[in-house]
Length: 142
Image (cartoon, rainbow, N blue to C red; front, side, top):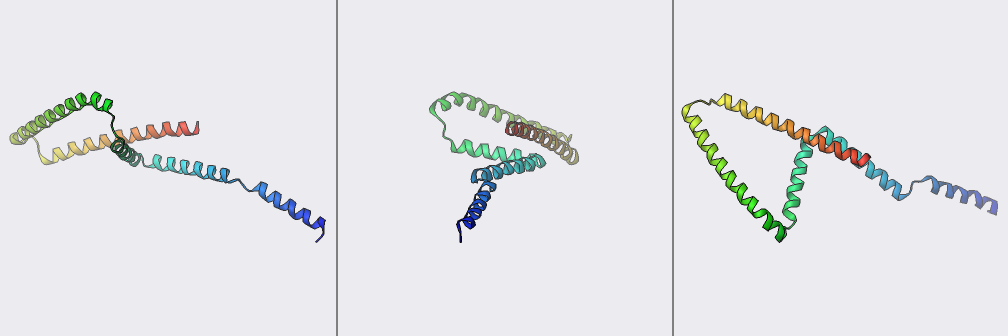
């Protein structure tokens, strides 16, 4: 092999290296693709995104320890909320019992009301999920 044969081979190897994307570019491309795929998936199923966010928030809340100041500040609020919830449950039981005794509620009407309430809650959750992901998408791409 002469020196002139070695130079073209070296030039070809250098050209191949410059054409190949670097590891950073490859990783960046994969990360951007994964983010875009995730956004598309979440836009297609916002209720799953909402439920996933709630689960993630609950897990984070359970794992992150509360500080003494947080406990001191939130203890009165927790007591008030617990008392209000207990009173609401008692009032609901009483009103529900009275309505059932009076016969003003029938099974079909009750089922229809619960179905309507669930439908409205689902619409609200979906709208909230879509808004949250639109804001996230805007922040990522903007």
